[in-house]
Each structure stands twice: as C-alpha cells, then as structure tokens.
Length: 355
Image 1: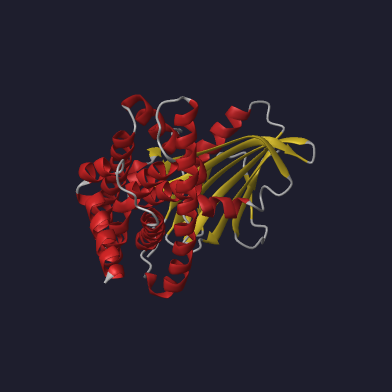
Image 2: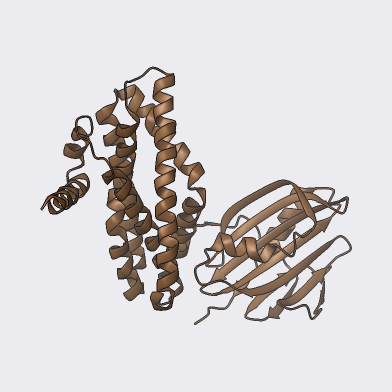
C-alpha cells in the first residue's frame, strides 16, 4: 500500500509539473521530492533520445523496427547522461547564486527545479511516432516538438523564479542554459540537424553566383566548372570524379550515410580521409541550401606537410545516400577568393532525387 501510494504521488506530481506548471513551481520551496527528481530527469533523457532518433529515421523514411534494441540502449545512456548533466547544471546555478549572495537556495531545490522542467519531454516520443507512420506530417510534428521545447524552457523559468528572487532567477536561467549547451552540445546539434532534415527551407540559400563553364553529368548529379578545371576519373573507391587546376583539386565523392546519422555527423565522417595530416588554424561550419537540398558547409585554413592549404567541403545527405564536394587549394594568395570560387561551383550542384 505504501509503495502504491508513493507511485500514485509520483504520477500526480509529474502530471502536475506538466499541466499545472505554476502550481508545481510554487511547491518547490516547501516540497521534498527525493529520488523523484532523478527518476524524472532519467525518464526525460530516455524520451529525448527516442524522440530524436525516431525523427531522424522518419525524415529518412526508415522504419524503426530493426533498431529497437539500439534505440533502447542509446536512450538509457542519454537518460543517465542527462541526469548527470542536470546535476552539473544545478551545481553551476547553485554555485552562481551562492557566489553572488543572491539567495539561500539549496542544492536539492535547484536540482528538482531543473529536473522537473524536463517533464514535458516524456510525451515527445508518442508525438514522434506520428511522423514515423505518417511522414507527410513531419512538419506539424516538428512544430509540436518546438512547442514542447519552449514549454520545457518556460517550466525551467517558472521553477527557478519560484525559488529565487527575480534577478537571481534570471542569472540562474542564463547559467542553466549555458551549462546545458556545453554538456549536451552534441544533442543540441542533433536536434538542429534534424530540424533542417524536416524543414529544408530553414537553411539559407548559398550566397554565390553559379559558375559558368562546362557541365558534367556525374553519378546521380550534375556539376558545372570553369574551363580551367581538368576532369579525370582516378578509380578511387567512392569518388565519382576528380577535377584539378595548377593550384587546386576537387573530389566529388559519395558514401552511404549511416541510418541514425544526422547531416553533421555524415559530413564529419566523409571528411576524415581528406583531412588526414591536415592541421587547421581556422575552421568554420555553416548550413546552406543548394538547389533544394541542405548542405553542411565546412571551411578550414591551415597546413598540410608544412604547406599552406585551404579546404572547403559541401556535404549533402539524402536519406541514406550522401555526397560531398571536397575542394583543396594549395598556397592560395587569397583564401576568401578561393572559398568563393568553391561556392560558385557548388551553386551549380544538382543532385537527382532519390526514391
């Protein structure tokens, strides 16, 4: 009976934190939640992992049936990690308020304020399943996910505001968001890349005037390059074409994108061979729209075997098929001009739609 009563209390508190956030926030200063905070943050982490993975698969049109064991294992890992991350964030907030002498906030109160803010994430996998079975609803599902994320953020603000004076609550919210972005940076990136996969129109069009010259019909794509770029096929596995000038090279490569990989992780994977031995002094990444597709645009300036080299890569992943344009400029007198030339060529890149 006691365990049943505790379970009923736990369910009621979780539900209250979701549907009556103001009432729940007011109870933080006087209620002791014990292990309930740990359970809710672990459950929220599990839900977050499942949601992201389901949306990644839904955007690629892949059934999650053959990934059940992996999804569960990875969700348990993220659940544990989110609990540790919440503890780190809570400690940073607690330490910040103590150092500024803003409040007598206890660490337990701070942890529960952060932990229960994640409670709305618990319902997210159920919504993500809609996109799995009805891919035409990906965008509405994505909008609902944004609403859930904003609701979690509002819950965090309410919870901190209930146990701290207003200036301290604002400071604590900033510290919580900054700490969370650091400890969960990879998950933030996965959410961002998934958003681009669901709504490619979010990507700004590549700011470049398409290059003029000779058009090449490549494997499942077309590309136009200025006349000075010489064409060859070297027989390198995964490379559909190779172009070069006296001071630059371009490899057009293809590779299978791992089923659960997001666009940024695919870009990292396909770039490994090209960057072997390369030491970057400056590296930048942005997301661009190229002729209806979303591309990960990586720019790096550095050295290779003591020689000045600038690299620019455009990587596009469509479902489980990925392609990249890999530019390498040797001893460029003007790195920005070299990158602009690469962008002009990339602006002509047309990839045929895949089934």
